[in-house]
Image (tube, rainbow, N blue to C red):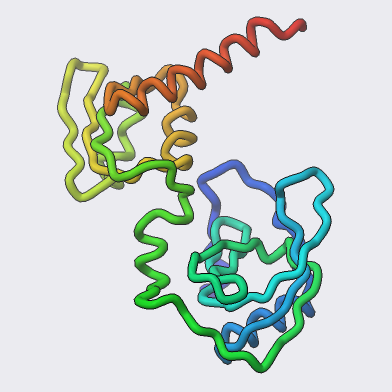
Length: 208
């Protein structure tokens, strides 16, 4: 009865999963399993109604991120690693050309280095003041192995941790609203302050 008693609940805002063409999925899975390239028609997210483009794809790995599936791959004979969302493939046709992975590519390292959190900068030393209740989960699930929590008052703690500067980090910090104040590094503090200022202007200038 184990499967009747175990469930997975997402922490983020629940969204409906997009549909993936079953025929496309079978081709991609086979290409990944057998180490073969495939040609595909793929529509990016760059415009509201993007026209699909033709790609020659070398699959390197498949990653589930929330309710989305991403194919980690290279295109044609280029060495830069890309992420293509499975639901944006329109067609996929298997070829007999073998995949040639980039030298020293490792899927686990690629993920650990934060590529799925959309890097915008290097590793940084984050310093942020949290209301104690908002930081409660960080005692059990720290941001990094070198995280330090310092009591500043009965209500406020200072969180210090070495993390990658990513868009995911920005979204996470902004999600706390007034319960957090980033104090370092300076560039991150300025970026978040500008974003909050733009949000404030939008809320106060929009007629009700």
